[in-house]
Length: 352
Image (cartoon, rainbow, N blue to C red):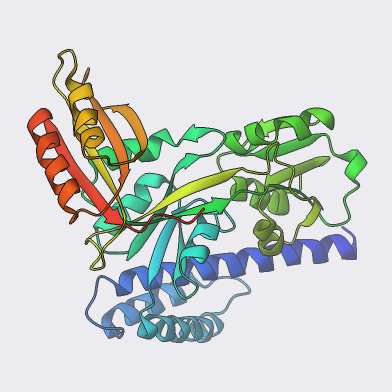
């Protein structure tokens, strides 16, 4: 193996070590939410004993112990700050992380593998907030998230719209003309259909846009590129071959912010979930209550209730505060016409 090849492998291992350290720090911050203080001498002793036992070959127990004492010290510093943690679905660099950064510059974005993990971690108190997408301006509703909203006990405490601008990312110094395959999330591939077709690229679905970028950087497949955010290029050391390759420049995704408690300040938009009985005109009566009160509806979606086959729930957003007299009166009528009614939250509407 040549010198440059060896160095390339070392660089990949270094990048993986940094990634794993960051993941460890994230988990340390999550554990801080579940314990009274930062110092846990018993746990620290347990970790050091396991590190010494695991040290084999070229990695001596003395070196490992020295290294992990530094790691634990850094973890304590971060835990002592007790920052706000906001979960998003996907690898770092995903559009969910961009939503977190847009919502709060001081919060720490925490990567979660699945949408269910975001909901669960907020419900259990490991995360302060979760940010999840509910609809895209081109591809419509994010059905998995809407299904989770039907079942959750969490409150929606905010929303924001994030412009989605896809980039074609490649390995450094790759020749654009050699690329034949492009990896990304199915929805991102659909949003860039025109670009992919014009350039005669073979689209290959991947579980996540940022995951595709990370795979490209780590596995380095030949003649391949990824469609992801510009942030991914920075995080994974990739080149941006082309920006804004989405078919429509108006492409954006609406995210909602989840928390265990309702916000203290008054909002100007509300979300509810309800079910109606199986009889003619039942949905019309519910919608009529809002019409009579002159309340503007901004979204209505229907989703099957997974725990109750053949039954459907409706997710409805409308403008107004839950303390407004006309909203209070309308909600009273809605309650009379529904078999199930859940108030998801009142929050500030996202600015267009």
